[in-house]
Amino acid sequence: MKKSSLILLLFILLALFALFVLSPSRVSAQNFLVSGNVGIKDVNITENTTFIGTSSDKNGNFQLKVFSEDATLRFTCVGYADTIISLNSNDFHNREASIIFKMRQISYDLPSAEISASKYFYRSKFGVSIVDISFIDDKTLILENKKSKSELKVIDNEGNNVANIKFDSLYNEIFVDFFNNYILVGEHYCQQIQFDDDYSIGKVANFSRKDFEEKLRVGVRKFNDCFVFKDKPLIVNNIYARRDHNKSIGYFYINPNDSVVERHQIHRFIDEEGYKAAAALYAEIISLYHAFTDENDDLIKLGLWDGNLMRILPEPECSFAVEAPCGWRTRCFVYINQYIKLDAKPLNISVFDKDNILYFVYLDEMKLLSFDDNFNLLSEKDIELGVNAKYFTNTIIEDCATADIYGVFVKDGISFLASLDLETAKFEHLTKVSNFIYPNVLKINNNIAYCAYFNAEKQYSFIQRTTIK
Image (spheres, rainbow, N blue to C red):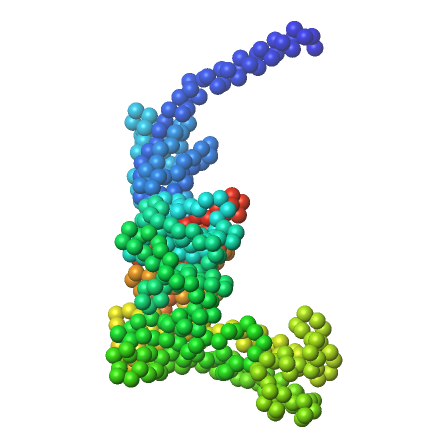
């Protein structure tokens, strides 16, 4: 083909393309405007043939330009039924059409929730991880960590920083005792802090983690002018034999108005099956040790044993990282290993009070116990999880403001909350917390769930709030 013919063909193709693009139908294609309101935010609106779309704003309003008066729009949103609306020339006036309706919510096994208007309530700086959240009055406390240092911030309801203080030590928890003392808990040391009228933060005292566990962690709450405690918790992940094999825990109260301060038993919880299994293993270990140890070397009979199971293991050099010797030594080693693993899991009990009633949620046995203001047992009920039982994480969270109780359910990495009905002992009204998976921190205050996440890709933490009632 000659060069002149190629140029002519190219000119014709360009002319045809221009006629197509600039044709009246194409020029006016974007001049049809559809607007309206769908009642909720974040609804995806898409035109079926062109796939051009938009989404509704926080008030449910939207606008979308379409190519033709004959347009079919699809409205979709998680937790709501898909809606399809077809338009024609009769629906348009001066090239504009209006659509107003409310998206219809549907019930899944795990329904959606209304997310707060702002995507993030709070976002940290680069390289900072949010490790805990707590609340004081109408403010939110945020404990952040960066390398070997911690920082505590006070945030108002708009997400603005009110006060903060930096610490040279690393802390991982904000603990509030029943005197409303605020304590930052670290791996080895704790720091008590206080707040002034302007919410500036001051340091009060330092003490060891051991003192905290022995003296403060045992305090449960104040109820009816009395102080409720639990038995001194025993350190679990170690190699010592323990009283009751850590398969029971008791609660008692102290009335400071009594002339003589004394402990009054409330209730003792016992994991019968776990206790029997641990006791059987322990008995087998002791029996093997006595059977194959010379009486002159028997530490237990000589009264020299301190409870360290590794001391009665026949081969001192044995550890759980190396292969145990054969025969009865192997059996003894295996039993000790099983005992330690079985013993390392404490009972899962949560204590709270509401409307002058003290409640114990015993999740190992799925029991809900209630006591009146004189600590008399009112009822003991079996907790029902409902149809979503397989998603339950064996975790209870208390609303810091309302004292409502929620269980945590997780499906496909997404967290949901269900409220515990104290009358029926049933978990009800499952609510989706957010669209992000596995929050680092989950707290509830005044019917709002606070979830903290760490964006590993962009190296920052953020908090999202969700209304759950």
